[in-house]
Length: 176
Image 1 (cartoon, rainbow, N blue to C red):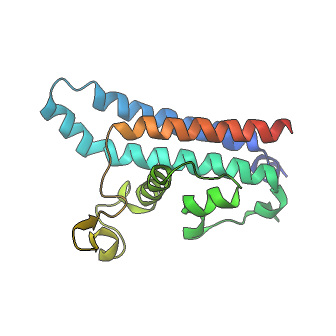
Image 2 (image 1 turned 90 degrees about the horizontal axis):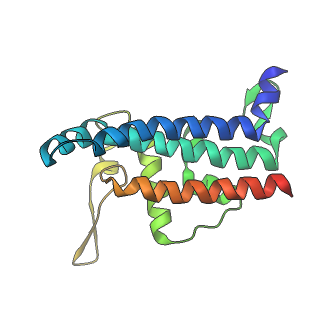
């Protein structure tokens, strides 16, 4: 009973998402506290991917709070969480399922990259398949860089904006 009550409680999901953001903030703060370009690069390379993974998990958990709010029985029943495997990490699919429209192609790119950091880039040195790591030619003069292979400290602010927007959606729907 406790499992299902907690699993069906959007506040529990939201609180967990906030904890993940705090953990990511510790890493971002350490990167930003570096004394020079070389030290910053060392820290960025060492923990930047992990910060992005934590940011991605925070966004994922917050979207799941919205989903749980809308239909708790669909996601938590018979003592089980029903959304599992790779489908549970597809942030573009999850946000669509939650009925939250994307605001821009940049936001879609951010979600795709966060998914890659949650799926592999924040956890392992390589993806499951080499294709996930290989740039692709797009037309004659462009290359598409795969998600999970690039990030910057500017992503922190982008995630903050997305997270705040998702919190507003959750709050609005809780009050409705």
